Length: 405
Image (cartoon, rainbow, N blue to C red):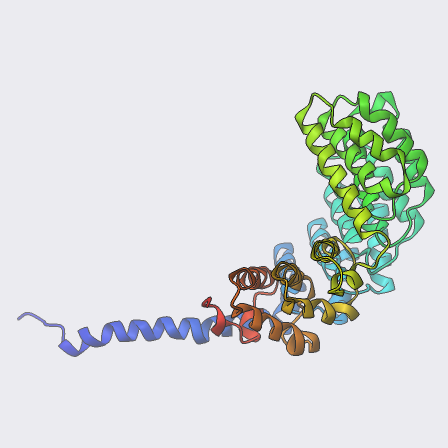
C-alpha cells in the first residue's frame, strides 16, 4: 500500500520554511547577539583559561557601541598581567582603539608606556606603539616613552614595525612637541653611511612629522641637501613631501621642489608636482582655523572644501561635532559630501545623546536627499560605521531606510 503526502503538507511546507527563516533573522540572530555580547558572556570568556577565548572576548569588547571605564579597566589588567602575549597584544589594540575617541585614564597611559618600554618581541612592541599613537590625540605621553619609540628606527626589527613607529611619532607630534632627542636620533641615523637601509623609513618619519608641528631647521637642511643625490625614488618622494609640508617655515623648500620637477625620474616629478600643490594649499589656508574657514560661506568654495578635507587628518574636538554635522546641509554638495564623510569619526552609539539627537537625524536626511552624491556619501559612511559598530543600523532604526531613493 503506497503512502501519499497529504496536499496540505505540500502547501504548508514552504510556509513553515519561510517562518523558520524569518524567525532566525528576526528573533534568533538578535537573541544570539544579545547573549554573545552580554556582560556576563563577555566576562566569562574574558576569564576563560583558554587564551583564544580571552582574545575573542577582548575583540568583542572592541565591537561594543561604547566601551565604559569598567571594560577599560578589565582590558588594562589583561594588557599588563595576562600570561599570554597574544592576549596582551589584543588588549593593547582595543585600548588604543578606545583612546581614539576619549582621554585614557592615567592607569591606561602608564600601562601602555610600560608595555612599550619593556615589550619582548616585535608583535607586542608593535601593538603597544600603535596604541600609543592612536590615543596620542587625547592622551599625553612622557618624553622617555617618545624617545623609546624613536630609537626603534635605529634597531633591528621586523620590517613592518618601522612604519608603525613612524606613524605613531607623527600622531604624537600632532598633539604634543617631540623631544629634541627624537630629531637628534633621526638626523644621526639618516646621515650615517653605514645605516643606508634605514633612510627610507626615516624619510617617511620626516614626512609624517612635518604634517604635524613641523621639523627643526637642522633636519630640513639635511633633507634639502640629501634630496638631489638620493638614489631611492621612494625616499626622494618622502623627502619631497617633508619639504612641502614644512615650506611655510622653511623658505628654501620651494626652490628645491621646483628643481625636482626637472628630474629624469617620473616618480620624482610626480611627487614634486604633488608637493607644490600641498604648498599651494597650505598657503591658501594660511593660519586660519580650519573649522571657522569651512563654516564661513563668504569664503571661496575651494578654500572651504580644502579646510574641511584637511580636518580628516586632524584632531576634532567633540564640542564642534554639531557644527561639522550642520555642513551636511550645505548648499555646496561637495562640502556636504565631505562633511558626511567625517561622520564615521563621530558615531559612538545610537543611545548617545549626540548620535540620537543630531547625527542619526542628519544621516536620515542625507539618505533621502535629492542629490545622488549626497545619498551615496550617506550610505557609504553608514557602511563604514556598521563595520565598526555592528548593531548601529538596527539600534538606530536605520534599517528601514536602506533602500536608496
